Amino acid sequence: MSHIDNLPPLRDVIRKFDLAARKALGQNFLLDLNLTMKIARAAGDLSHTTVLEIGPGPGGLTRALLASGAKRVIAIERDARCLPALAQISHSADARLHVVEGDALALDHREVLANHGVRLGEDSVKVIANLPYNIATPLFTGWVGGSDWPPFWDGMVLMFQREVAHRITAHAGDKAWGRLGVLSDWRTHAEIAFDLPPQAFTPPPKVTSSVIMIQPREKPLAAEIRHLETVTQAAFGQRRKMLRQSLKGIAGAALLDDTGIAGTLRAEELSTEQFVALATARERLVKSI
Image (cartoon, rainbow, N blue to C red):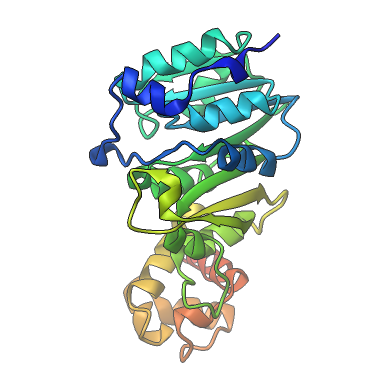
């Protein structure tokens, strides 16, 4: 029988182990059990799922995931101060919590999962995390922009600053539409589930946070990520200019002729499909040289 519900209050744990949040690590702890359970429930039935959690801190969301019946939680934590608190949870979790000390940006997440017995491509894996703000975007782009697809995960529930969440879930014509939105829309279905106010966290950040639900597209449009990145970087790097000017440095005239996309358009007017077409045209052009 699990003893998660018998663990001491998180504020007592933070006091006991002296876990003041560190700005340098992007830490803002979510201690409200009602909110952590809301995040866990957003992921659906976890009874047959291995959860990869990044930056568990003192373990607020970790507790909720385990209490919600997650088959297993593999948590990557960089801050060694938090390890005793997580060990306390692990002791009460019937061997369902495995803590990996390390930098999530530097670790190979596929390798971490495989080392803990996860059969990649067979077992259900979801990434569920209150991501540290300072590494949230590179983690997301790494999960979505990898060379292997389908990915190792079959769903993600992630927390970001609301501004970043709007960029991830934006579509053509939206004010927030940009490189992050194109990458996200190309390979995933992403939507904001709910927002969390600053006062929900300790210490309170200066911004509202948003929880996003993300599902991978089974068959995204074919494109090489490096060419899609080149095209979106050029187009949105000078987003106020027409494409014939912003794409000039990457043989834009040839790309526009190949795709039939009007050079008088601006980046924010293009759909994901049009960016993929430009990336594919660039791939053909590079191969022909």
